[in-house]
Amino acid sequence: MYRMIYISTPQAEIGPADVDDILDASRKNNTYNNITGLLIQDKSRFLQYLEGDQQKVEETFARISCDRRHIAVIPLKSGYIGRRQFPNWSMASKYVDSDNSLVEAVSALIQNCDKEVSEDLLNFAEARDRAA
Ligand SMILES: Cc1cc2nc3c(=O)[nH]c(=O)nc-3n(C[C@H](O)[C@H](O)[C@H](O)COP(=O)(O)O)c2cc1C
Image 1 (cartoon, rainbow, N blue to C red):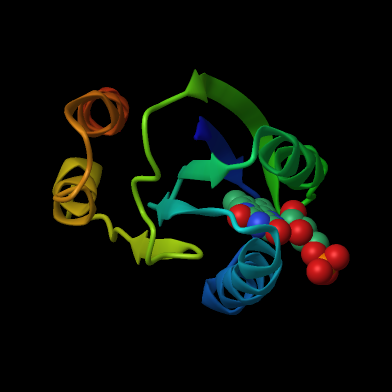
Image 2 (image 1 turned 45 degrees about the horizontal axis):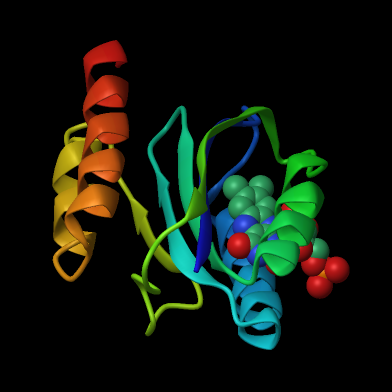
């Protein structure tokens, strides 16, 4: 199973309706491409985890990278892992408001993940929370 994780910065004018549009398109395309994952957002960052066939994940990420609804798209990690981590989620999502931490949101979503994946996601969320 190929997976990649990236972080990006939402455009300032992005609101909840835009995120709903992103999730609608993501769920439709990801179901078709057999891609699953997570999209976590706070007011200044997206953190996304994508997994599936390598070519499909790379094609999807190439589309996402060009999307003008966010900037500064930075891949954090990619490569092969043993198994699909989020088999039931064409794109799980969570918006974290300013009173809550990304770590809490990530913790709630990674309960069924392998150790390596949960550690990565938590480390990125912790780094993000420290920077906030
Ligand atoms: C933060 C973010 C995450 C996204 N995640 C996905 C995704 O998981 N899958 C996907 O197909 N498109 C995703 N998109 C949308 C793509 O950039 C693109 O708009 C979409 O794939 C085009 O689909 P369409 O040709 O069916 O309209 C995301 C966009 C943003 C800004």
